[in-house]
Figure (cartoon, one colour):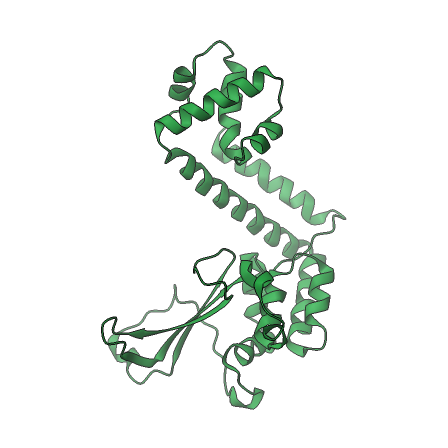
Length: 267
């Protein structure tokens, strides 16, 4: 099957899902949903209030820009207001168990701050489970929980009582009910899944030959015991996407030695 045909089939499947009665939970970890919600000035205002501990009246104006489409030269940089970068990660980056980090540009040797105008804020969603009770009372924690929510129940619970979050929930419900919005959301969901698969495949390719040969041998033994693909993946503590190509080649070539299977993988 060609890549073009595969993409066409996938797209048709997405369209069918979009017009179906399938209930989908809109998650803000989905890039399409996140951008859709946070480009709404009536919603996004609440986030910097929580992040920077500001009152509503202190935020005079919100400009939503795309850094990949806007040009910038030295003249434009002069006299600019504070530039605050916010990274929301769905994985762990820092060793610290804290979910929220704030960075400034400084001289590594003297620790002198270069400028307070440039700030970097990082939120690690995977660390929310380690947050202490005192921190849970802060508005930023609620926003992080809203972004990390995986069910409608969680979304309703975290947004309740906050007008900005409640508006966000209303927009997410609209996405789940509109055919075109559902299609665009599901398309991004599939794209994210494909990107994750590519990363995992790259990790598999990056392994040393000896490790892969050992894995091939293990899969061969499991197949002889009539183990299924999911069972082998679970017992070997490997992702299914790593095991699947090896499993398929062994099933198709039961008499092949592990070295032959390795060559067939074309790593």
